[in-house]
Image (cartoon, rainbow, N blue to C red; front, side, top):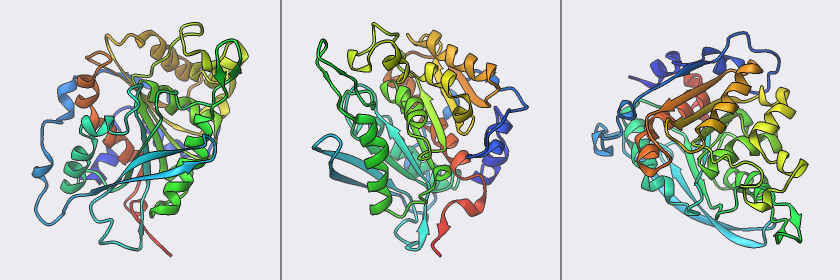
Length: 320
């Protein structure tokens, strides 16, 4: 299937893309729940399946000094096939966050770059950049200050939104608009993929939350705070508090049918339904594990492709 055909075959919610970034108001078509098998993603095909001549992308590792955190942090960036051969082209970007492992290579281990080579090389999806920033084990959130717990206010959310994104825009040929940026992640990163756009609006336009780790107050890391401070960092509370802002985004939410946070993820799905916010909701077979995430990498890349690239003219764009 070509990526143009993929764009036309919106499986879940046709209104999710039609709504568009920056538009607000009620959604007239309710979201639809779907269930799929891990085998449906087809991730067993290797990058070598790409036809000759299309080439592969390449990966760079970089670092920069974070003023928000007063330390140097790394990132990996995937530059898609054609990036070097098209020096005037600008590309959308997916920022994909790791979980509590704290390693920027986590998504690489699940095959995200291999699958990008395969799908972009085959022409199944259009080219876009993939950025894997470093988040340690800090939930990608601005911590509270609490002497009782030792929380010292480290600004991991500010770092991600206000430093990682501008650094990538400055160093690579991105399309530096919200509708051309996605943020996704798994577990701890899935939590962040929802709370960051609601706390830092105007940066991303597409959300992809995978197996979000949604610990309740009292069981969550103490640097997320309590009471109003916890609510200001909790995805469900933020959606309830900022429904008009939540409507700005295009949403994806998936989890395993035996994931320990299935109930909490379902509550977010139910809240989006109640607010008539169009979104893709998937409950796949599986748990909270590398096997689950690796089985669906192609699904995640397909979602980024069709939301970041709604038309042939969108990906990439020629510099003016």
